[in-house]
Length: 311
Ligand SMILES: NC(=O)c1ccc[n+]([C@@H]2O[C@H](COP(=O)([O-])OP(=O)(O)OC[C@H]3O[C@@H](n4cnc5c(N)ncnc54)[C@H](OP(=O)(O)O)[C@@H]3O)[C@@H](O)[C@H]2O)c1
Image 1 (cartoon, helix red, strand yellow):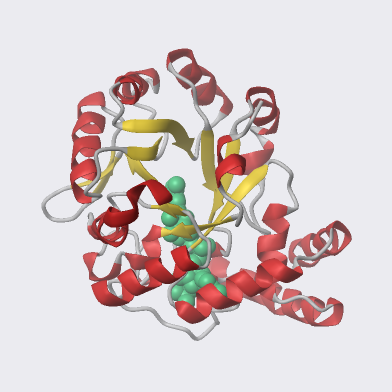
Image 2 (cartoon, rainbow, N blue to C red; image 1 turned 180 degrees about the horizontal axis):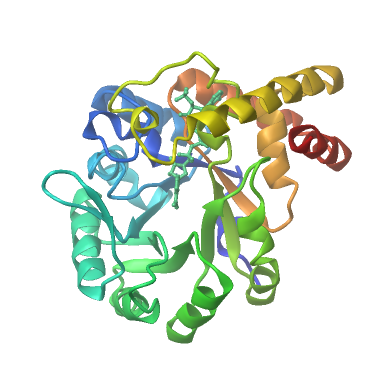
C-alpha cells in the first residue's frame, strides 16, 4: 500500500507554517514581516521543500494568507496542508470545536485565505470529546468528493477516533508531536499506521527550539511569540529539558552530530515517519536543517541519545 507523503516528498522536511504567523498572533514564534516570510517560503521551495503546513490559528489566518500568496502561481507544484477545529473569538480567545458547521465554515475560509480552489491535505486539528469525529469527517468526505480537498488527515488523534473516522472516509495522514522527549503519539498508533498504510508526519520535532539549543535558561520571549504567553509553555519543565539538552549537546560533540542532526535523525529513524515538520524561522535555520539532513546519525547513536535525555 503506497503511503501518500512518501510518494510526494523527496526531502523529508516539511515547512511548519506557524513560523510565519508573525504579528498575527495565535500560535506562532514571533514577528516576521510578510516580505521576509515570502522570501523564506520561496527559498524553502527552491531548496526542494514541497510540503507546507498551516492552520487558521497560526497568526489568525496570516500564515495561510502568506502561503497562498507565495504559491498562487505555482499552486500545483506544492502540497499545502491546513486544518479545521481550532477557532477564536472576537477577543482572540482560542477555542476548540469539531462541530461540523464550524468545520464547513473553516474550510471555506481557508480556501479563501490560501487563494486556492483546493487544499491538498485537510486535517482535523484536535480531538473534541464533545463531538463524534464522524460528524466533521462527513463534512470532509463531502468536500473531498467535490474536489475542494484532495486528502484527509487527523492530528493528535488516538486509536478510537482514527477507527471511527475511517468508517466515514479514508484517512491518509496522521500529524502528531514526536521528538526525543515525546514518543507516545506514534507508539499508540503504530499498528494502525502499518495496517492501513497511513503516513505519519511529526510536529514539535525540535520541541519549539528546546531541542535545537535555541531556548536557553535565560532567554525571554515577547508577544506575539506564543512562548511568551501560552499555557503549554511550562517554564519549570523547560528548565529540566534544557539541562538534558546540554548533556545531549556534549554527547553530540563526542559522536560528531549536532542537536539538529540528533533531533531530526531521531524522528526519521522511525520507519513509520514519512515527514518531519520544522518551524523554520529564517534562511540560516533553513540552511542548517538542510545540512543536518546530510549527516543523520545511525540507529545506535539515536538509541544512545534517547538514553542521554531520559537519564
Ligand atoms: N497539528 C498540530 O497540532 C501542530 C501543533 C504544533 C505545530 N504544528 C506544525 O508543526 C510545525 C513545527 O512544529 P512546532 O511549532 O512545534 O515547532 P518546532 O519545529 O518544534 O520548533 C520551532 C523552533 O525551532 C527553532 N529552530 C527551527 N529551525 C532551527 C534551526 N535550523 N536551528 C536551530 N533552531 C531552529 C526555532 O526556534 P527560535 O524561534 O527560538 O529560533 C523555531 O521557532 C508548526 O509550524 C506547525 O506547522 C502542528
